[in-house]
Each structure stands twice: as C-alpha cells, then as structure tokens.
Length: 191
Image (cartoon, rainbow, N blue to C red; front, side, top):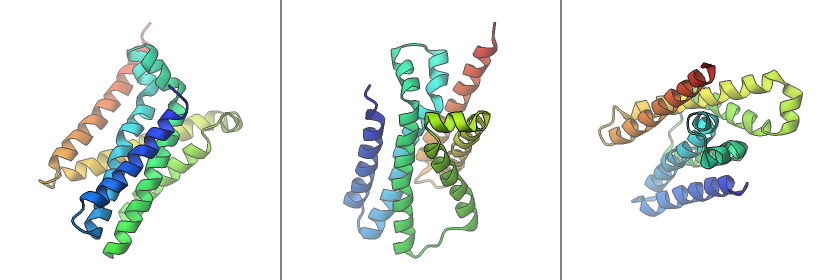
C-alpha cells in the first residue's frame, strides 16, 4: 500500500460526498445539507482504520493489518482531511440555511476539531520526540474524544425514523471498534 493511498482515498471520498450531495439534492440547500452529512459519514471508515490499526494487528496479525499500522499516520491525516471538508460543508450549509449551531455543538464539535488538528500537526517524528509521553496522552485522548463525538452523533440519529438505520449502523460500528480495542488490550496483558 502506497503512503499516498490513505490520503488519496480521503480526498476521493470527500470530493465524492460533496459532489453526490449537490447532484442528488432537490435544490441547492438540500444539496448542501447532504454534502455536510455525507462528508461526515465517509470520514467514519477512515477514522476507524486509524482507530483500530494496532488493535486489529494484535488480534489478527497479517500483512493487511501490518500495513494499517505502517500507514496509520496517513490514515489519521486522511481523516483530518475528510473532516476539514466536512467542516467547510457544514459551515456552508448552516450559513445558507440561516441556522446558527447550538452552543453544545460548538463546544463539543469545536473541541473535536481542536483535537483533530492537534493530532494532525503532531503526527510526525519530531513532535513525538519533543512531546515524549505527552504525545501519547494527546493522541489517546484525542482519538477517544473523536470516537465519543461520533457515537453521540450517530446515537442522535436513532430518534429520527428516516435516519434510524444510519444511527444503528454507526453506533454498532463504533461500539464494535471499542470492543476490539478492549479485546486487543486484554490479549496484550495475557502471558
């Protein structure tokens, strides 16, 4: 797997989500809403690869999972890319719809973006060396906080009958991902 593949995948998914939203939307406003919604959704599998890379390799060692570990940094950067596109699409939709976001969304989502960008900016060997143990703390907190925001977002879809299936899939994938991380950590502690 090329080092560029995760970044290209993130770029292609983001552009595809924006284009699809505007092509399928009945009007410009609905297209913007779909672009914002779908850019978040295409970020989930990219996020999950970065979130699960080492856990999958501990549970199922092999060439594919070893490649995920070697390219985990690129998958994380690809996720930062997809969510930057999501942020632009979301701001655009909220602006043209005249819908200011709620304070809890600004605070919760805002902190998620702070974590995304801090992790992206420190995803290099120099930062790892300079930050030492704090690098690991930053990335562990950040990735789990993003996981939580995704979980809360998909759980919110469970209340809407038209989006309930999306909520079930999203919550299910996120809970499964957490279980896999716990299993991998538990297996690591076994003699």
